Image (cartoon, rainbow, N blue to C red; front, top):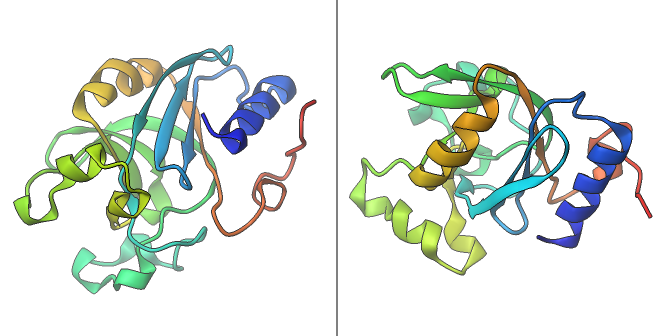
Length: 179
């Protein structure tokens, strides 16, 4: 766990910012997802595929656009605090809606385009390999099935996406460092 993720987890638990719900921290700098129960106990961690573009903000209106119209530099995974819940996508597959307005979800890795080598990218030690999506967070299917889905089953939770171009204090309004 990176120091940034550790500090964020400490703040969440110390402040009660998760409001008694399970939570996930997405560490974009490390391309890792960490799942915690409502008490702040780490359940597990896994690599993640993230938005192609570096940045902490979604382009206004991006959630209403066709994928084919989204330019590579617009494909960010936005930083922030999101109340998330399980739902079904248009194919009937379960996903965790992170930022519904901007069409950002967490889901098992998409492998429909073999040229993208997403499974291999997840296994790569190179962070740059993990930048490929339109903004969604792709995780290993087993990790999603065994940790993400059960943690958010029958409840909402909070997803904290750590910034990569700004400070935690500028993204999370009540953030403070716990010593």
